[in-house]
Amino acid sequence: MTLGDRNTGRPRFLSEGAAAMRPTELSTLGDAPLVTAIGRFSQEALGEAYRRHSGAVHGLARRLLRDDTLAEEITQEVFLRLWNDPEKFDAGRGSLRSFLLAHTHGRSIDLIRSESARRTREDKDARLAPGSGQDVEEEVWEMALADSIQEALSTLGEGERRPIELAYFGGHSYREVAEILGEPEGTVKSRIRSGLKRLRVSLDAAGVSNA
Image (cartoon, rainbow, N blue to C red; front, top):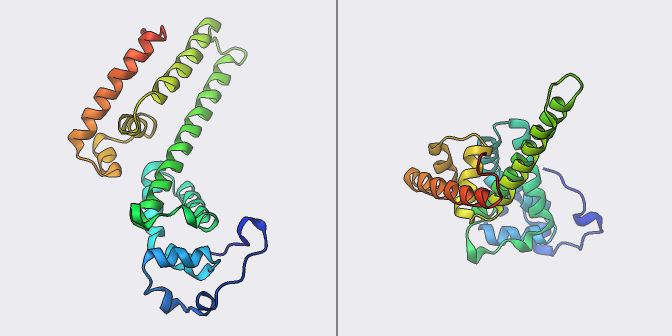
C-alpha cells in the first residue's frame, strides 16, 4: 500500500528509530506503538497495520455492500484515513481493529444511503419521462414520503437506526444484521420492532400515516 505525503504537504522527518525499523521489528509492535509510528510518517508501519487488519475491514465492507470493488474502495479509504489522522485512534477506548471496523461500518452505511438515494432519483426520473404515465400528484406524494422517512430515521437512537438501515437499506436478514453488529438476533429483532414503532409515530405526526 503506497501513499504520498500526508495532506499533500512535506512530511516531517522520521525519528531515527522509526526510520530504521525493519518489517520484522514492526511485526513485533503492538497496535498502539504501530499507530505512533504511522503518526511519524512511517509507511512501513501503515503497511504492517494493513497486513494485520485489512482482511477484517474488507470482509465487513463486502458483507455490508455485497460488492467486492466497493469493498476494496472502502478498505483503501479507511486506511488512508488512518494515515491522515492517526491521532484519532485512542488505545484507551478499544483496539485498532475495532476502531477501523467502526469507520468501515459508518462509511459503508453512508455509501448504502447514497446508492439508495441515487436509485430513488433514477426511478423518479424514469417515471416522469414522457410516456411513463406517472401521475404528478403521486410523484409529489412519494417525494414527501421519502423525505419524511429520512427525517424520521434521523430521530432514532443509533441502537435502533443501525439495525433498520442494515435490514431495510442494506437488504440483510435479521441473522446477518446480528452478526454484523455483534448482537444476539433476538436483541436485533426487538430493536427493529421498537424502531419501526417509533418511525410510525413520527410518520403519523408528519401526516403520512397512509404510507
